[in-house]
Image (cartoon, rainbow, N blue to C red; front, side, top):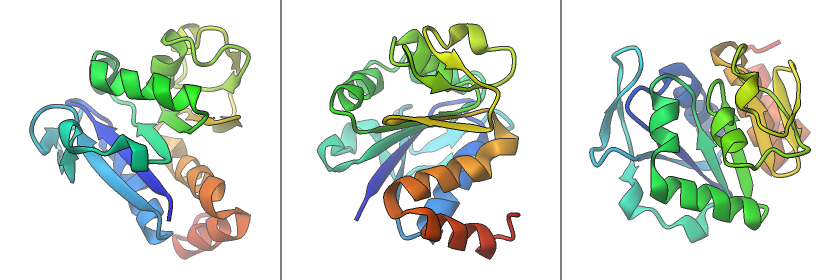
Length: 182
């Protein structure tokens, strides 16, 4: 079974994070919500409290297949400042394991130099931080081991692309139909 880790920082965009968690769990993909704050309860950017499964210190990264970064402010900035997370992001990229980010969070990959020559997208107006990327306005971009998406309104297709990565088109289509998406 595939395992995905999604990281919660103070100020994360709740809908982007929880849409991914919900749809991946519906698809039977193991996903753990991981706090980088030292507390399993993490406030989102709109005052909604997310209760995570684990703290970053408790995670076995070797058993994970993908890391997901939700956007939101200042959540994205807090993710970028988390050295243990960034060490893992670089390690996953070197190993060609999955990386995914939505909204402002693809800028974390851009500033880390991971998007050079890759097609990528992000929240409108933040494209300057997709350093080296072939910037797109597509809702979702999947280039190699990296998936990026534009924002809250693209959270469902973003999650479906992650499902497609691990389980194929038919599984993603089945989940899309079950939530009456398109």
